[in-house]
Image 1 (cartoon, rainbow, N blue to C red):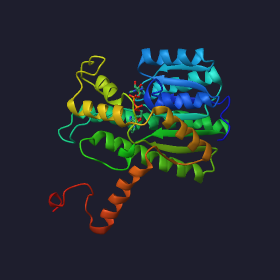
Image 2 (cartoon, rainbow, N blue to C red):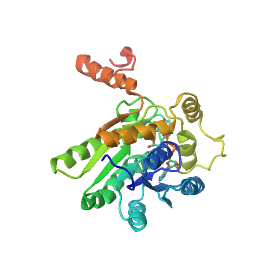
Image 3 (spheres, protein in one colour):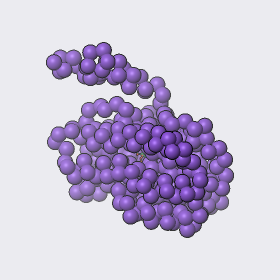
Image 4 (cartoon, rainbow, N blue to C red):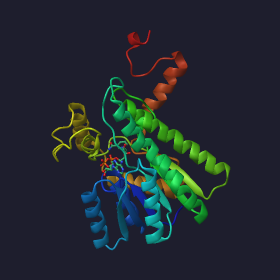
Length: 283
Ligand SMILES: NC(=O)c1ccc[n+]([C@@H]2O[C@H](COP(=O)([O-])OP(=O)(O)OC[C@H]3O[C@@H](n4cnc5c(N)ncnc54)[C@H](O)[C@@H]3O)[C@@H](O)[C@H]2O)c1
């Protein structure tokens, strides 16, 4: 897809961070926006801001872990704008916890949002795009979708699933000469509120104070690192737009981080070891 003017983008998790960065980049290219998010106040404020800048935008409360809510999102998009050209399955959550013990409720929540969200998005929006004869689906994974570090079990599993989902989808679409294309976004550290938001959405937890004061120590550490070292989300939005324009499948924000993946594959082939782990733990 190379002409975005007047086209429609649906972005989940569009009220904050990377989703909002994509919305800003897409609006700059002349697109109409459908923003889905669970955060009503943030979503309403963002939609109002776009409208006051003469961007055609509509928002909807939508939990991506519920298939019927994605169906309602597609209905809204069709009713308001008569089409959907770009879908960004972007809403996501993550909590740093050892693989065991990790509460089963946390596993289910993270996999439902981070992996079933994109699965449901494809199920609902792909037929609309194929009938329309044009479209692009991008899902947000992570470098955690290519390299599984410790303490992020459910997140790593979901994000590896998103990479597999999008790679398979891209090949399937090419095989049937579909008019729809696909890509996967694998960001490194981006300056967003993901840790704070994830702690607030975690099932069975009381909502923390707005400053994230109840967040676990590890989540706080990640949040601080993202704020100090993370890329600006609008920059990510520009990279996604460029990738859709040029037909690239892999979208990296920090291509230099790919060396952890090549190192892992080299160690796997050389001696079957798991890179990044002390050798004396692998006997
Ligand atoms: N920030 C990073 O460093 C980073 C790195 C790699 C990947 N990612 C991925 O980028 C995506 C966007 O995250 P972000 O960093 O912009 O975080 P963010 O918290 O700023 O934005 C995520 C948005 O998703 C919304 N959301 C959460 N659960 C939802 C649900 N069930 N349904 C609908 N909306 C929901 C939140 O309200 C929030 O507005 C996620 O998939 C995340 O895993 C982020």
